[in-house]
Every structure is written in structure tokens, then in C-alpha cells.
Length: 113
Length: 112
Image (cartoon, rainbow over all chains, first blue to last red; front, side, top):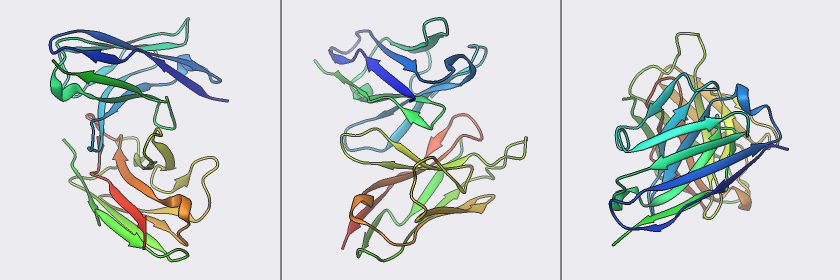
């Protein structure tokens, strides 16, 4: 069974940093592209970042480029999203996704003073 | 960036009746490899998104056959043949043909 278990998240002040993690099991992690998607309160789904299987291709939404860094460790089946210079508008539930067919349970990130 | 437009944004449907959601893209979603990376996802409050259909019309594992997808190029449709109570939620089309990947605004399906 494919499982994506997320950790991290929480309440931080504007300008702070936070790292989200996603540990995968039940599939061959190192051959799949992985993604981060978020949903702000009352809003729709927004793609955040994608990383290819060997980390050769990494893409970011313009809204997070230069502030967020996606990485993966295929040896430990883990995906990470390092978020820095957080803004109020980054408040959202963040989901990791195996391509887009399986999703993590979500991590709530609240940025507020 | 590719913009996805969904209609309607809200759809009240009686139980057992069909429902249809349209997704239009600002440009063709046909990838250079010939695939069309248009998918449909269902979102319920407190739950992660659920993949329903991928590459336009392929039903994902465990998805009931009352869900179907069609279309090509820039026009796509999600159809539910007979709506059941458990189908209530927000439906998003999404394109992964080109970065940035983008989602439609969502269509809220509710029971009339």
C-alpha cells in the first residue's frame, strides 16, 4: 500500500523558516517525480514545487521561488520542503504527492504575527 | 502559464441524476510526447485530494465507473452518470503538461 506520511508544519511568525517532510512507503520512491501542492484557507489547490526522481529537474511556482527549496533523499524515501522568509500568504495546508496519484495527509502551516 | 477554466463553479444535482463539469485550457494540453496530462481530482474537507481520472479519461484504481472523462486539446469534461451522496465535494481539473502545473478553480458539487 502506498503511504505518504507528512511531518512538520505549525505556527510561525512572518519571516521565519520551517521544513516539511514526507516519508514514502509501499512503492519504489526513487523512480517517481514528487510534488508539493498547497491549499490556502477557503481557496483552491495551488501547485508549489516538483522534483524529478533523481533531483535533476526541480521546478517552483513563482510565488515561492527563491524562498522554498524542495529536496529528496532516495536512500531514506523522504521528500522535504524547506520554507524560508515565510509570509502571511503562505498560510495553507501543504500536501506532498507521488506524481499526483497518491497524496500525503497534509501539513498545516500558519504564518502569523 | 496555462490557465484552466471550469464551468460551472457550483453544481446542485439531485441524487441519481447526472453531473457534468467542463474544463477549458488556455492552450493545448497535448505534450510533445503525445500524451495529454489532464487529470481530475476530488477534494473533500479535511481530506487530501483524490485522483479520479488521469490523462483525460483513465480511471484511477478504485474509482467507481460512474466517473468518466473525455475531451482533447483544450476542452475536457468530467461526467458522473448518477450522482451519489458520497460524491459531494469540490472537483478540480489539473494540467501537468507544462510547468507551472496548474489547477482549475474548482467546481463545488452539492446535492439538490
